[in-house]
Structures are given as C-alpha cells and as structure tokens.
Amino acid sequence: MKNGVYNEFKIFAGNSNPALAEEIAAIMGQPLGKATISKFSDGEISVSIWETVRGEDVYIIQSTCDPTNDNLMELLIMIDAMKRASAARINAVIPYYGYARQDRKAKARDPITAKLTADIISAAGADRVITMDLHAAQIQGYFNIPVDHLLGMPIIAKYIKEQIKIGAIDNNIVIVSPDLGSVTRVRSLSNLLDCPIAIIDKRRPKPNVSEVMNIIGDIEGKTCILIDDMVDTAGTITNGADALVKKGATAVYACATHGVLSGPAIKRIADSSIKEMILLNTIPLSEEKQIDKIKTLSVAPTFAEAIRRVFSNESISTIFE
Image (cartoon, rainbow, N blue to C red):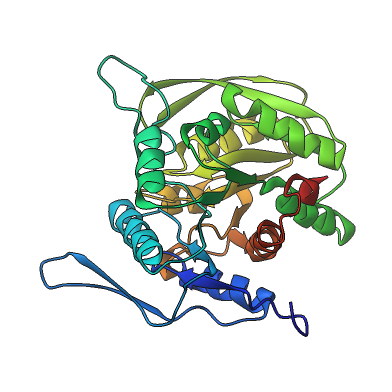
C-alpha cells in the first residue's frame, strides 16, 4: 500500500455488474483493470486484457445472474485469460452465485448444477472464490479451492437500525421467516436487532408457486420484517406479506440479499402489502425494476474490505464479529 492506495493487485470487471465493480475499485483507490469483453458475430464471447497481470493478484468481479450462461462464460474465459497471462493468484469475486438453487437432487435423475458450476470455475483456473449469501451454505464444500462466504445481513441490520432512529420503522418489530428454510437467517438478524421472530409455514404445490398455510408467532399489532436470501418471482415474499397484514401486522417490510426479480416479480411487489423492499446490489436492477417500493443498499464496502484482507492474508470472518 502506498499513500492509502492498494496497487499491488488489479481488479477487473465482467459485464454483469460493472457499476458495483467500479464502486469497489473506487473504495480501493485504483481504477478498474483495462479489459474488453464482447461477442463475435456468432455469439461467442471474446475477452481481451489490455495490461500486464504477470505476477499480480487479480480479482474478477462478476455476478452469474441473468443472462446466467453468458455471465458464467465471461467469468470462465476471463479466468483462463488471466491464468495464461501468468497472474499470481486469480480470485473470482461472485457477489451472486447462479445455479445455487440446484444444490441437491430434488427428484430422480436431477443434476446438481451448483456442484458442476463449482467444478468448472475451479477447472478454469480460479484460486479462490469470494461470494455472498449462498442459497445453501454447503455449496462452499462443492469447491476444491478456498471460498470466502460474506454475509449481507449486517448491511441490512445497519439500515434497519438507522431507520428506527429516524422513526421510519417503529421499535415494535418482529423478524419473520417466509418459510422453514430461512429460519437460521432470520435468527441471525433477530440477534443483531434483539427482537423476536415468527415463521410462515407454507406448502409449495409446484415450482415458483407458494401457498401460505399458517403463521407461527405473535405478529398482531407489530411491524414485520420478512427476510430471505433472494427474491425471484416474489410469490413467496408477497404472499407472506399479505398473510401477515391479514393476521394483524401494522406494516410489513421485506429484505433480501439478491434481487433476481424475474417474471411477474415487480408487479407483485408493487401490488402487495409490502411497504418497502430492501435489496443489496449483488445483482444490478434495470431501470424498469427500480420502483419506489424498492430500496437498494451497496455491498461494495464489504467486498472491498474482503479483497483487502484476502490480499494481506488477514481473517475474513472477523469482518462480521
């Protein structure tokens, strides 16, 4: 480090989330590495690195969000380009890890695509993965290289505390899990905010369709904060919000790390009982998705600190203690 600027490593960006990459680089006090990622006329991806990386630690920032396959291939080709250019260590910074929901065999003859994706990233030449809020924590074990798993919940907790201070959210809060699978995540936030939890017990008759069955916990007259790792079609979170209001909640906020927001998600959120949807910017939101109900918080400071610690061989876990 010289004059507060980290210049012994280089940060490169794919096309999935350039704004986040620029913000991380700015916090680190250096420009993004010079690279061009484009397509040939037949759709093949072309990567050109315009500066030396020989002997350098490189950090490639690329979420594998929609278009998932294009963004994943960009990441793989960039890793290969860095390896062939003799980079010292190649770190894949993946704020949103696509295919994470295909983490097990739900029925006979299903693939486990989260594991396949991990194998491909390792085979391409990555030495480390830095990601945030994997859909299933055990995906870390799918890699044969180190994985630094960052947490988005402290960012959301800090925002909620600030809103309580200025009176936007009252102190009568209950943290609500939209299903049984999110209870661990909900307990984490409830510990940070020192407030009780509730659980929505639901049955899912088919993929992307949820049916609320029962609410476990006292939510009547309370401000409810729904927590999930991602919002895709928004059926689960909006059905849960509507059910909470019917059961007597005075207001419902919703929080998630990854705003996938596919299909009817934006219309569902706009028409729902949710007062505000709080998302992190691991996935960029197109202009039509930036509605008044959605508030986006930045993960750039967390990733910048993680990169600094990886480079200087310091502990990552203590960021969240």
